[in-house]
Image 1 (cartoon, rainbow over the protein chains, first blue to last red):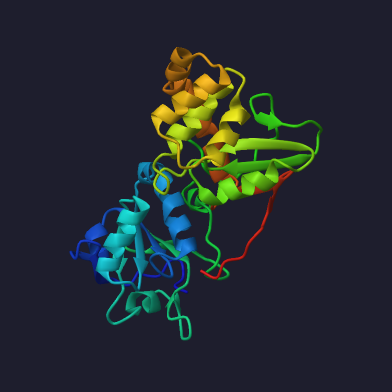
Image 2: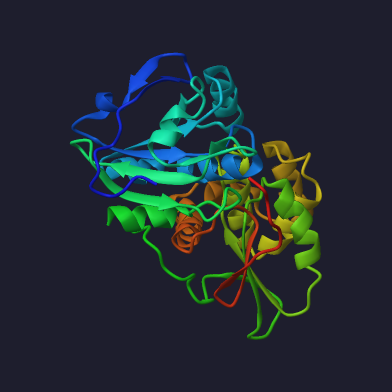
Length: 150
Length: 159
């Protein structure tokens, strides 16, 4: 798991609309990276739905919310529509999980996806806070995010 | 700006929706549009002791939920909160406005008052208050059932 105070590895991934998005695009703003196992899994659906409900409050804190999983951007689009969310979802698809690996969040075979991990990157691209779930079946409530932003 | 940092769930107070009597019982954060909640509600309502219902509508997952919670709250202002909750969970296929009006008539409520109350700022604030207390307590899915202040886990999921 990447450590607080380390430089957040830059990346360029496609979002749910197929557009390229880089971490450096967020320079000057805080961004909360939400690594999650996969689109359409029950826990991931709950996690992103709950976070969507408090997204305005997260944004009031000057933080942008960005989800990342190993799914394709086509799957991201369908997942976003199914959940009724507008959170940006980035596709860590090829090489599979490369960004999750760079952040120390990837769970190797037989799982083959990111663990449920939160990484807060501050305005100058430094890791300000992290949270890793004990297992992919659990996700931190939104209160944990607000504790970190307090 | 609302404080959404961690905090235990609030103790049961006079503003809560309480079914049953006694000092012991369960507090459930539930979403009226959630099928899991509907299934759990059938079991919860048959338990002896006190049952407290707190609003936890997840709009993105269940777009109709905010309207259903507002309807329950408005029915509650005329003394029929749990009748509305039972009915909404008991007949999940009939939750559009005409169906709500049918329930209002069935329960003998004042429709004009119901219509005003379910759209009022105070109703929205009442629902939001419950939701935010759930967020602060770490509610991460519905139904979330608390025994006193402890979250009961009734299922484990792989991912």
